Amino acid sequence: MKEISNKSNKGCVLIKVKSKYIIKQIFDNLQQKNALEILRYNKKLRNVLNKKINEYKNEYLKIEIEIIPEIYYDTYFNYFINFNKKEESYYHIYFNNDTKEQKRNKIYKEDNISKIKIVIDNKVKSFYKLFFNCKCIKKINFIKFNRDDIKNLSFMFYECSSLIELNLFKLHTDKSTNMSNMFSGCSSLKKLDLSNFNTNNVFDMKYMFNCCSSLEKLNLSVFNTNNVLNMSHMFNGCGSLKELDLSNFNTDKVSHMNDMFSCCSSLKELNISNFNMTKVNKTNYMFNNCSSLEEINFPNCNIPDKYKNFNFLFDTNHMFFGCSSLKKLNLSNLKFNSVGNMGYMFFGCSSLKELNLSNIKNYKVRNMSHMFYNCLSLEELNLSNVNSDTILDIGYMFYGCLSLKKINISNLRASQYTYIRDMFNKCPSLKELTCSDKLIMAQFKNKK
Image (cartoon, rainbow, N blue to C red; front, side, top):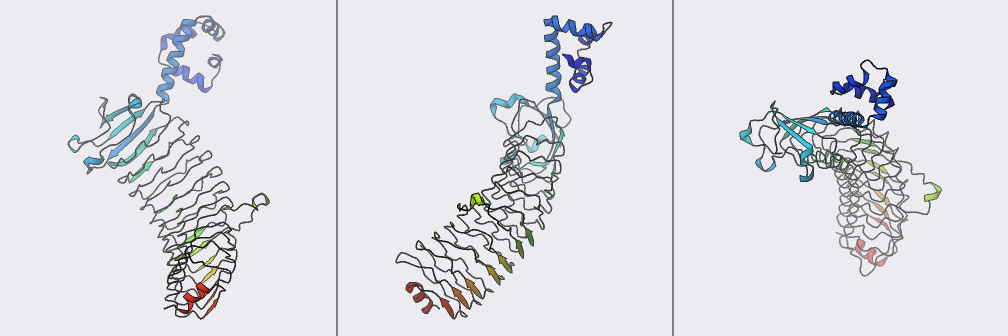
């Protein structure tokens, strides 16, 4: 109880305790030294005081949230908060300015509710699915938040599709470890201020902004991603996002980047030259349908010696599918040695004129079907480093490459089990093919 003798935070708590008679007994007409002696030997008094301190602490650490419901809400999605039955008593709900506590987490049209106040006890340690699928919420404001021990924020605002305003300035994320799907499906949200976020301990950011289709700007300059392992689908479906600065991102530990920017149809340029992709094993659908993307700056993957013998990347299918505005692409620094699936990788990249795949040394690829389908502007391709005896599907691989004149696939070999149909069809300009495989050459001679 030494805190009483100074002006520390805990001492302040003692002064604010409402049990004035206890404070009066201890300090009135007594020196602090004597007061401490009384507390030391008077167990009953000490217990009463500790009880009052805990009561104040519980009150101080309560979280207070204000919700503005949507006027026209669907009766099937009329929940405004989620909690399990075991923790029901930890949530205190008030409608409008009424002081009477409510015992339900649903609202109905006839309620005529303009405001909902929620007070959460400090016994609640997780915000997992707190507002999951709460489609009737229009605005959320964190009014009081004096805690930093909430670890799980995953699915917190999942599918809050009517949400147009979110004030998280008082939300403390210092000890949060999971932010996966946190804002996923917030399709009406146009702006989001995360300037107070502390992500030092977060390891999972998958689907974090998934399908935030109205989001126009996103400032993530304060994000620390040193411990993040998964970024798959992180910005998937952010169709209104026109620019994205990820220059502060540390991806040293990230293994999954599949669908990371999929369907970001308004993005014109993306610089990920700072990314470390040495541990990434999945990039499938990474830029799928980024139809406005004209340029991607890839990192110089200077692979550390300790990873030289490891081949992490194994799936790149649909990686640039539908990137119809992309004009040039240099992938010479990526390591493709163990990629098994390259199907549809550049499908529909109709503006692509320059493609550097000089580092595509591969012995394990099984699927290259539709890989360059409708790459209308490509004139030359060198795939001489692809040396695979396990290829199962190369059907429609170069289909519709109208400008393609020259291809080198000298080490690519097919077998009787390989699907080769229409491999070179709709390639009217193709005159030169370097290839030693008879089955593939037969396809070339019979192309239509």
